Length: 228
Image (cartoon, rainbow, N blue to C red; front, side, top):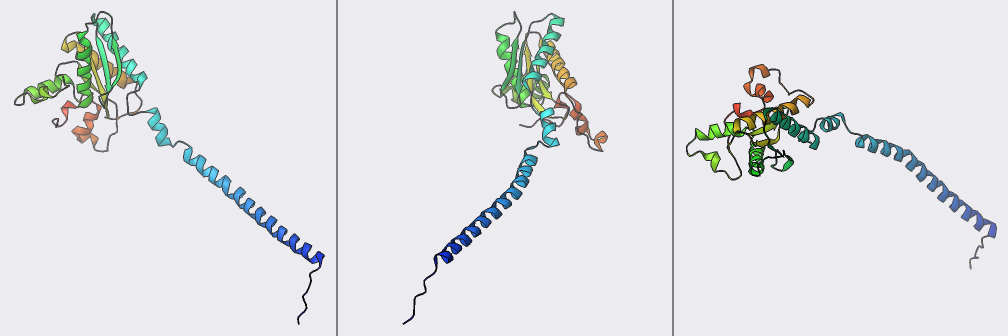
């Protein structure tokens, strides 16, 4: 019959001490790994969160009409109208056809409000002035563009195109004659382009490419015929 070996109290205490020591060592190693890995992860996260030069350029040169730019264009159009002795309504829309800014000078007729909106909407949808679109439509059988709802083929709507050739929206003006409305609208867009940073992108062969040269013009109606 085998004898049962009884462990001494000191031996049991030593075993517990050894087990606790192993736990402490394991926790310490895990903590060391975390303190080594986390700074690297934080650094990587900060690097990813830091805006790149490309993103910074997009913020400095937004490819949309800012509220400040819209107001400056409206002010330029109003100044041109005042110099000519006219009161006008000014509508500015983005390239989604949404109203961005509106201004109505004193003593401007109520009807000019809707006319200005329609002109702006037309040139916001298509990168061509309302006057050139009217001329083009008149040469086609049935004057087709005139039948499109929400479009107005009357001078005074001008597309807003930045120096990079991007169509950002349209400005519509009403209150004077169609010819003068168009002149005031062109003055507003010219003011915007003068204040906009950057130059239009040109390829090495842009001088031989009429389409590339056309990026600098305010109205893209000189490009290929508009297709709906």
